[in-house]
Image (cartoon, rainbow, N blue to C red; front, top):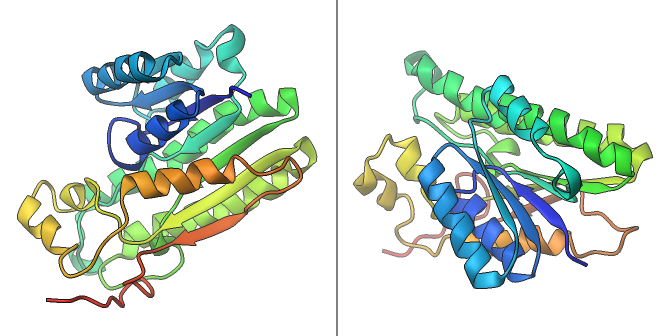
Amino acid sequence: MKKIILVTGATSGFGKAIAIRFAKHGNDLIITGRRKERLEQLAAELSREYSVEVLPLSFDVRSLHQAEKAIGSLTGRWSEIDVLVNNAGLAAGLSPIHEGDTDDWERMIDTNVKGLLYMTRLVAPLMVRRNKGHIINIGSIAGKEVYPNGNVYCGSKFAVDAITKGTRIDLLPHNIKVTHVAPGAAETEFSIVRFHGDEERASNVYKGFTPLTGEEIAEVVYYVTTLPAHMNINDLVVMPTAQANAVNFHKVS
């Protein structure tokens, strides 16, 4: 059965791959992101390639006002969201706590935590009204283990893990599934953003082993939505074979 899938942060990385994956399986999509041109281009490509309906909503999840306006604009069938994928997130900087850039801290907390909360607060009531739905929060291995210089990013992703668990409890009476997907090392724009556009430094992160791809995480996200109605995956950690935890890798020179 065709569903309506809302994916935040759909202009690149996991979000774009997730949108493509759901479109391939014939689902209609609401895709969000800050980069309007990229968003509209993706919407046109998905509609043309997979014959699905795609509604692009360009706004910043860090702004409650913008999020309220965007979700409040949904009418008719578009308000009947079956799956919310809270994907928008980022890492900014990699410094010890006493040298951290507070602008980076604000950006991570506002996106990874507050943005996820805003979207959940706005979309969950639409699901409660219909007594069904599925919320998938994209976390990280950094929400399971703290690593050197990860301090605030790890804190934001630990928050995602805790918020997901709390959301699962709160929405239990309303027949709404809630899933946390926590990837390990995956080669997307993640490290480029973390290192403020330094592509050489970013590429070194993935040398010597085969990292995950956005497409592979998208397949996992799609899979958890295909299970029987009585079955939910609460928490899923996905890592490359060459990665044991947040800091231990088997790299070949």
